[in-house]
Image 1 (cartoon, helix red, strand yellow):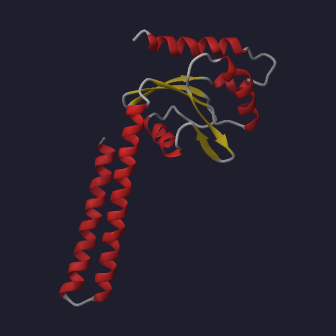
Image 2: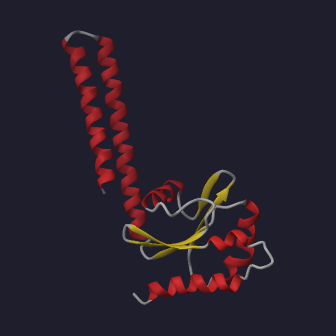
Length: 174
């Protein structure tokens, strides 16, 4: 929450600077300073509104997605396709997905929220598949690095499914 407080604080400080420059121009009949101060003030107001809307959207997403699972697998295209074909049909519970579409993170979650989740927990990285569990303002992670080898002949899907089910069942008993 301190991050959001700092967003709001920086907006207020920027608005104060814009008002001060505008007032300085007003007192000295410096029309260019007034315009610059006004533009800074307007930019800070817009930034503040955008920051507020972002915070509200994030809070709404957190409250709507409590106790939900996310399969996070932004990897190479071939690996993603193999995960979609072999792993996902075998998972027997509801979850959201995040993956690559070219250079973009897409899926069931908005990109800005995915990036915020990655900021919350630095163990969430692209090119490292994982199953995530959203709980309050924290993210629990089951790393699934073995999915990077899903195309190899030695890979056993059942072991990964069992690992995912154990992770899920650990939260059903809470």
